[in-house]
Length: 136
Ligand SMILES: [Zn+2]
Image: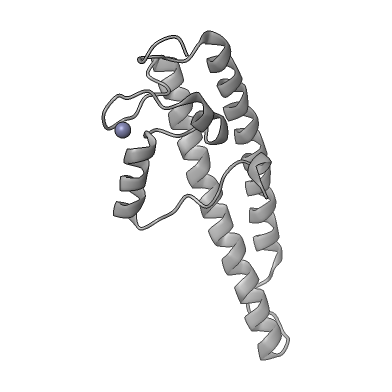
């Protein structure tokens, strides 16, 4: 820790950019797969009611996963444009540096912990999704 107003070192920025780009590729692939799978399930196909309910449910799940993936790609693109603009790694609400440890887990984070919690409360969401490496 060099000073209280640490901004990210160039090496850290490089690491986070690499993470953002690889995560974007991974999600893009996942998204395409989900869209294809959703299309492959023909709606209203013959079969009993249970089958249809089952495939409807599966389509809904795929659709919401696909939406979620698009939202994540959007967040990653925003993070990448903040990187280009040189304002990456700072809270959008108060300009406080976002800790590197947090950015490593959520490289597209745009709020410090405090404001992220506030944002989640306002939007009635919790960020349940996170990069694959933090699964337990
Ligand atoms: Zn903040």
